[in-house]
Image (cartoon, rainbow, N blue to C red; front, side, top):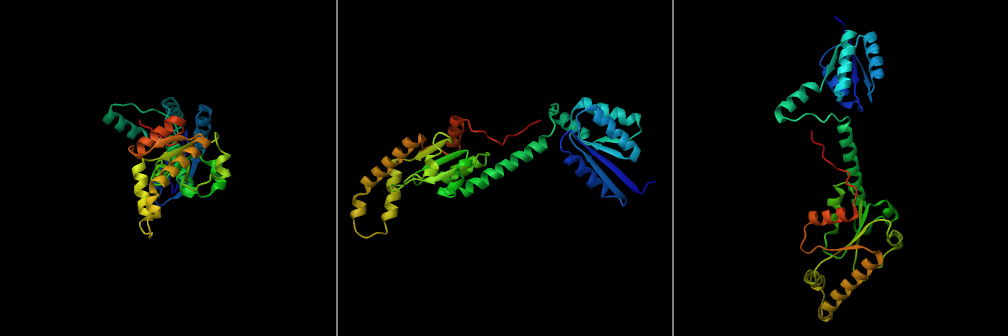
Length: 275
């Protein structure tokens, strides 16, 4: 019996799964281990080379190739060369197929694609946090979407909902005294922009809370006028920027998000693959 173990981890994708299985299994044995990974194996001539090398190294071949034709070819060549070759997904494929009544999609690299989607989503979330409430205007050009909104329009929750779909969002607060910075003006018609508004009663309640701690009645007396001015100012800004204007009074975050993504055909980077 040999005290040396040589394993070839072969895949038509990046090969991480085959390699991890080879490593986890070989660690259970007190032998000298040597594991080689072969990725992006999609052609018969590549298989020929690997089997020849495996025979020379007296190696076990562990593979996660999903294309049936290439699997059959590898099995045939390994058998002819007297090389041990194990399709580590075949048994699970068979069990899932029997359980679900479905056949595998035989699409290579789905795990790697999901890793890329997870990475894109994390990038979007990080960007959205860093560009909350008017922060980091110098990198607004990297946004997929800019949200402008009056108080209580759920700018941040909406931005984070979209970020979880892989969309990089910056949001900017609108008030009576707001002047739109050049960083936003210069991106008009280059990056989609959404202006959020709410009903007058909600704005009135917010203003009352703001002025509750102030003495005197002047501010309270002019409350309705101020709310009207704040709304007029917001609509002037939205018109200037050619924003899609959305009243968020009744709709929930998910519905508003769907409206935005459909309107601007925003690329959702997170998808689900089902076999």
